[in-house]
Image (cartoon, rainbow, N blue to C red; front, side, top):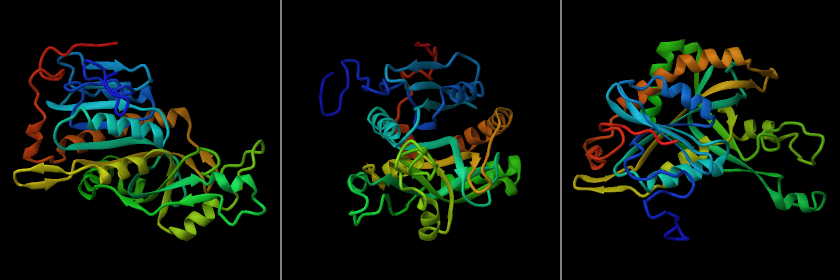
Length: 308
């Protein structure tokens, strides 16, 4: 590795995601589950086999084209740290503006039922306050910290909402505020008798602070936050946002009714929404600056190579 500050090897590959320039596109769908990435990859153009790469840290990338437009699908695993690795290391090897769509799962806290889809317009982070647990009876701190909201790209959200609503009906597509939690268990208010979590009131408190709360999961806030804090592109026509981000999340758990999705329902909803998400992604206008990302010599130009 050339630098301890931002590790990249002699070929220009980032340390965790394992990609270099020309192997990942300006338009990306990110998922948690590698199997979901493989299912989405089946929707890509089949004129030539896509480029695939599994990094030594478990990031799985598929790059090809969809309706002739370069697209990458990257499976990152779970949690805000994995989203941080992904966004930063992809930004380092892609030139020009980027559009990133997260397709994942969530728990609902409001009207959305199991099998519905939520497109968050904004997100907050809910993180465990570790110092509280040193001496809870004497602590003046609360056991969980709730951040201020950060917003998604409104145009990308609108495009995703329109595509999904046309596909499954407006009654099954919801929007609102998402809470990204640093634990599937403690900061999402699940009961685990093996640990002291002091989380009995975390959900009710969240809904009091943010009545527009509709969902809980573990990645979206970090995607939105990094998109908003990415350095802007400096172009001849002026500055432009570097990363445009949105998310579409399938409701796997209805926390209000204590219901969880079946595998058959998962297979059904994934098969439906994949094409709609890809349609929304390729139709998002990245502007003339998209030409900053050259296709010459890239894996989606011609003669795509498979790397295992």
